[in-house]
Length: 505
Image 1 (tube, rainbow, N blue to C red):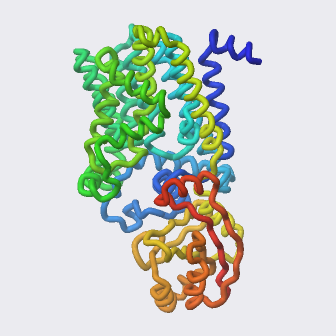
Image 2 (image 1 turned 90 degrees about the vertical axis):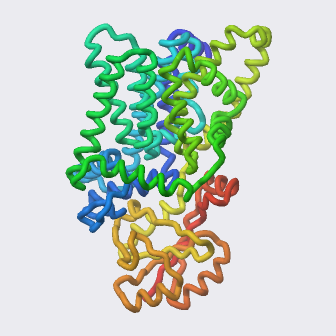
């Protein structure tokens, strides 16, 4: 077996790389249930499924009474809506079955990044560099899990990679159509993730710097036509003005730039060094910046994207995800070129090999755990449990032990409703205001309650019984291992056990 693997690695490395990528992504498809964070579920899955059920979970549609755009692209969420409608037409209603299919489709899409990352490195560097680049894109510890999530920051990457590959590869025929289509593909990336326009603009600017005027113009025309078709026309139809959602997205982020996670400018450099795991992360960043002039088309789009996010006050880890594969590709190209010319490293091959062995040991441990991690398990399983209750009417989430609240993922419940008390699906009450609310609107009375976390649980149950004296314990849905570990590392990531009680009449 070892001899066969060595022969494949030397003679057909891309096949071996793709096999490794497929294996771990299939593990994530099968076992990495749930969702990673708020946006990859509530802004995609919940909205799309609610539309398929003739509901509007996030109040995005004018038909729901929304007078203003929300600042979200309709394209990516709309594709999920079409998928869910199609699955329901085929008789598939089970939420977990739908998510197996969603994760599988995303895993398949992510293989484009692995394949083209290898091809780009092979095109502009050596086969050895391409092999290392490909295996990193296939087996970096966070890639399989991230690849099956509904993160727009990850879903846009394959389209950016296709466009970059088309601009790099030699073209002898149909040059006009080729660069026009490259722009069209880049326009799809923008429609998935608005902020990728920085990367798309960087590609066009790199062509201009290289004095490829015709190519740059054709690329720009293709990108604009695609953006106009997928964003302008849709917004014109819904809101009466083109690019309304994009304008709202820009306005909201500028006005709220310091409302969320304001960090220092160097935060993303620290993130890249940690996420890509030392010492290889240092190799990659060094190689990335070392190669800027020689490989401008690979460097400039990612650098513009990185520089903007370093400057912008609101910094969240996921924002930088679209350029990580490009940092890996160009980083390996630049690092291997440096090592091949370095007297220091040519005399210390054993040390360099030891660094790589240490890296792979460090990488494989979280890869094996994260690839099969069930994220937000307690929230998802609580909804799945209640979906089996024939007497279910409404639920309320009791979280008086902290200031925020956990939005229940109704997708797994299979039922949709609003309180009608404040805007949005879930309202925040004190126990007194909830009692007052139910006295005024008896139909809003819940018959199940979820308590998250055991902090002061007995007293919280006692206070809740002042309004609902007849409660019976049903079950506990525990948080997953990874959820508990992340919460232990940083309590801001609140992923607690769910204690479900039935409220008797």
